[in-house]
Image (cartoon, rainbow, N blue to C red; front, side):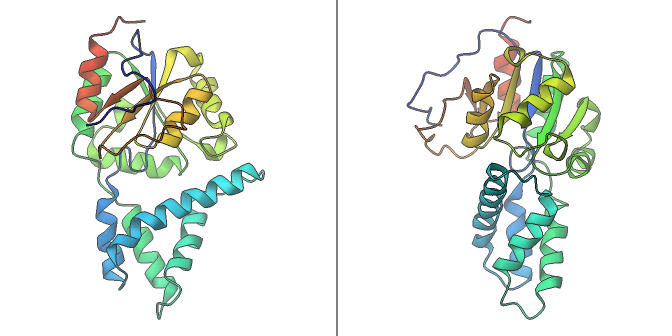
Length: 236
């Protein structure tokens, strides 16, 4: 795993009181979504750009003052990708059904249990709905380790807008300096850092970190590794 070149790693000097988890791709394993694309006659490699385009559109709507429902925007962007299918509505529904039934990454269950055992408060903060996060975590048997499942539907803005992270902090009653975000997305780590939280990059791919973004305070390759690293830090 290659560390970002724009800052040193291990800048956390104490254990956060609160860890705020991104959900889509960070906890959920979206590699399985390619199967759904194949089943409706679309190359599986289009799943990744579809999701990236969905996020782009959500960010664009956010900066112009809207707060779109994730599922509605996901369906609309899928119809664009699948527009030449004979039955675009059934194809869209098939992919969405798969999206709503994704599994957790293999490291999540053990890592979440280890983190909870350290006494760290765990919450999620998703650009999607809280119900999707709940179903995902219940399938993995770790929903009870999270005290809150938060959505930007109540923020009222998509991440990486400051209001999204402030919503999590206000709801949990924790100052920004006592909280850290865990995400696979550099844009999310950047947004959390800009809002005053710590930023923990869960680097599942080893891809170079984009230097224009605010650097993460910690880089790990799995959640058990994160728990082990945080265990070595002083408790708050």
